[in-house]
Image (spheres, rainbow, N blue to C red):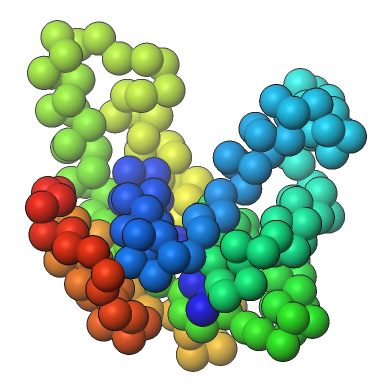
Length: 201
């Protein structure tokens, strides 16, 4: 089973991917994590990515697709995976479809964790107040609002792409973590191997 999780910063994609990993044994494939790992390991690909990012450029579609392709060849991905942070462009989505078709598989479901932008910013403002007003430059309500706007702009074409395939499903990302997990489980028809009711949102 191959799944894609979409959602803006703070929507809980990582948390839900971890739950799916526990319940279904599906590895979480985060391109950000893989890029950082490649750079830390000093691989040829990592060196290329480091040089690109040091110039302030975005890592190209072909490099990102190459990383995903290599990762999908690993034994733990044979039964499926949860994609987090990929694809980010239509070209990447099309490449992913081609990769999976070559493995006689396909994306089973695309799950959007829908959140309320104002509520997300409100949470951030509360955290800043609780911390006495101290926050990193990249961890402020203003920065979050910009990131949310970028997400909406960049992700909308991908949502339309998967909606046209009949694979897009939406869940309420503002709900408590166990409820979100339950809704995702209902969508994919997965069976639970671990109780996640102890988690709180």
